[in-house]
Length: 361
Figure 1 (spheres, rainbow, N blue to C red):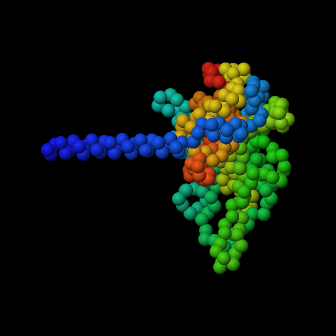
Figure 2 (cartoon, one colour):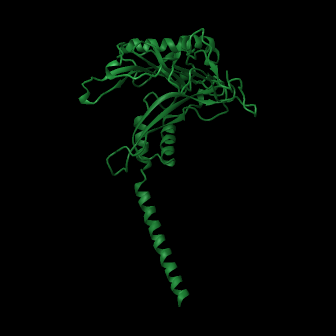
Figure 3 (cartoon, helix red, strand yellow):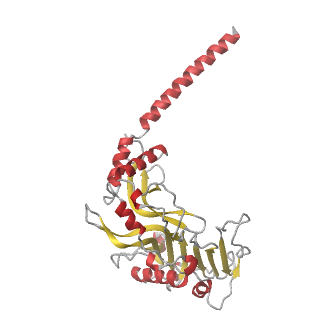
């Protein structure tokens, strides 16, 4: 009798569990966004320049001008003169001489040179750069001597945004070797990617906010040999985004306090990327929508899709690969008003069908 009671309870528990599982499955199916909705979102967001045949577009992207890579343009002595000073000899990290791993692969780490102590009160400067500059990372930091300041002692930045932009580009190109022909010129000289770093105070302090730094943001862009004209909208595509970001901060005296070059890879073309293998608009729409749904990114509030250049990194350089970059803003369930539930994310999809892309040129 005791064992039968246990068996009945076990069967009942299993039935309850099965019912709960079925309900959960049904709820999950109900909450899953439809493929049709994603197909509509992707189709609306995909740039009009992408049509039924994109061989011409891919060919135009692959013809983009490439600047001198950092592996050839970066010179430490030049960088030292523009950061520490030509007569200053900084201290190097202990592993700066090692450029390979024990297995013979290129070392993806960085070499760091410094003056002063990072945790001390005196002035400190640091210059780090990829030991394998094909990776494309350079970082410079300058911190003045630590002093106590009152709000009234803060020196405001008075330079204009265009002046800050020009100084930043000049510093990156002159001292850190950044190829300035890979920095797109803003179409409007007054509308430049510059932001103010401002320190604010409580209302009772009687002190207005002070702009203490100008920060310039730059994204790498490759200029096409000739503009690609969208046959439908007649708009011209002249630059294409590529891997690489840069940031420069300057103080009230116009001195660079921080400069960062990130992921500015050495890029090479591949003979194996054939424009004739370009994907059609419908193929891209299907691929992107199904990928978002399968990878759990289906709860989408909005999409933005840009044409760009991706790369297949090979340890010391990256192979150019035309792509589209999908910027996703997640939302709630389809039956609810869109709202941010998680951070946005970016995914890349090749514009060309996969092929053997092993031969650079």
